[in-house]
Amino acid sequence: MALMDFIKKQFIDVLQWTEEGDGTLAWRFPMSGMEIQNGGTLVVRESQMAIFVNEGKVADVFGPGTYKLTTQTLPVLTYLKNWDKLFESPFKSDVYFFSTRQQIDQKWGTPQPITIRDKDFGAVRLRAFGNYAFRVADPKLFHTEISGTRESYPVGDLEGQLRGLVLQNISNAIAGSGLPFLDLAANQVMFADALTKELAPLFAKLGLLIENLTVQNVSLPEELQKILDQKIGMGMVGNDMAKFMQYQTAQAIPKFAENSGGGSGIAGDAMGLGAGVALGQVMAQNLQQGLQGGGNAAPAAAAVAAAASGVKPEDVMATLEKLGELKSKGILTQEEFDAKKSELLKKLI
Image 1 (spheres, rainbow, N blue to C red):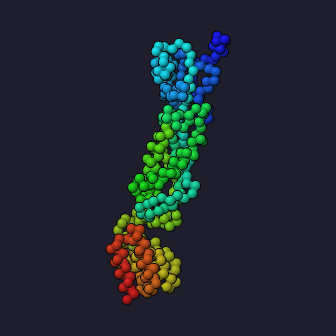
Image 2 (tube, one colour):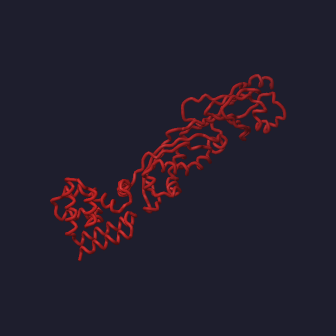
């Protein structure tokens, strides 16, 4: 009977995995009714790794190459099997292959706006999306932590877990970078680097390596987006206060020109736009310096100067509120705020 059982057995001479299709991370070699022949061949292709598992214990791990299976090439399995000399009979062991290729274009995104802490704004709600790529780097750890004894383990079974890790660590990445959110939002590569750094150890615990991550879009609340646009515009003129006044006035001029027949409406527009910080003689001088040779801009510049001479008390209060907002956001210093406050209050006397 034992002889018949031996004859019925099938012996494996070559163990290999020819991947078919994309998206399989782990694959178990079919061993049902078969044993591995002594001196058999193990073929591990580039972008693959393989492990032998004996009675639930991970034994030997193989990288790319072709191996003749002997006690020399299976030292851990030899120890577990108590082979004190060259084994001569076939043996049974589970063999798992792992794909170490990059799994690219894995999507991530915020299904709902998330709230993050920021040192400039206190709290910011944002949406973001992008993609990332990863690979299996430690097949032994991936086997024990993720894929286990399954016949195959596809990428799709891991997508939700990895996407959750990305979303969970967005706020940690921003906080850990030590940079204001506006700086990160304006530089998406910097944002992606900070997030990748935060995720790397978490992926490593699963036997994975995150190769790269991109932030393709960051959607901000409308008010915060306006501030970001203003910050980008200010980058063109630097931090000089006089240039800032010139920049603000240049933005306001087209609107003043359109409403040149509006009388008191012009003054109201000047106040409401935050260009009130540029009203008065200082603004008139900066405007003349910054717009020399402007031609059609001259009537608008005169309208700005004229608006300052007939300011209503409610307009002054509205301007002070705007100045307070600029100061709280760091655009104006306390000294600049106090100077403009004094100048505006004088207009009420």
